[in-house]
Length: 267
Image (cartoon, rainbow, N blue to C red; front, side, top):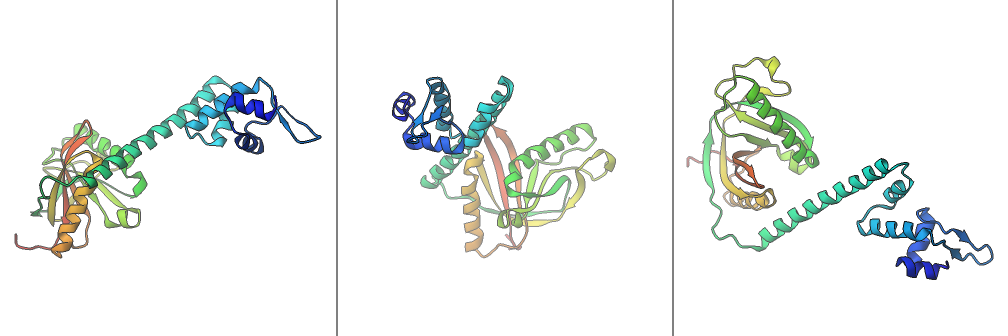
């Protein structure tokens, strides 16, 4: 088949077919040495259809080459499943971005309510690590699971809802300290049973507090409103943001208090 006929049969342009030839993804069955015309066999139509379908799913050329060269069905399916998982992640990120933009376009029905709160020193079971910002979601999930297991397997008793603490550097430099904690009644517990968690007395802190109720896609609006408030009132002091999870996510919807460290105002 000439490249023209093969193009019509596969709906791949001559430019695309030349590119696939150059990168070794779909080489012609023969190249005429007299005029360098590319000639294809009818058996290659099926491969071209597979390639076109994979490219419509934004599968990289190298991955397509690996799929076509895979030695068995299981190996091929693993590669395809891996790409589908990547697409699913991208889809979720796109949905989150769309939800966030819709939130910016929608004027809040009521202004953000901000209160001042003095939080005393807090005995807590804490998991604390220095992490990359890109790993925050996975770290949060793992740390939360570990804390839940420890609270169930030890005699520790919770004295309030779970919380998180995020250093400024985590957002400023995309790497910094993250902590997830459960307030507890007493710091008395065998250290050898706690694994990577630690018993700590969290320091007292004064906070400007606002509450977010919704999905994680829209929490940025509350952070922005809270930041605007403390900046306008010139209240901000160095220190980690503290979150308190009043209601854990149900169908993606959670209720979270966000505490921004401020200097004591007497309110």
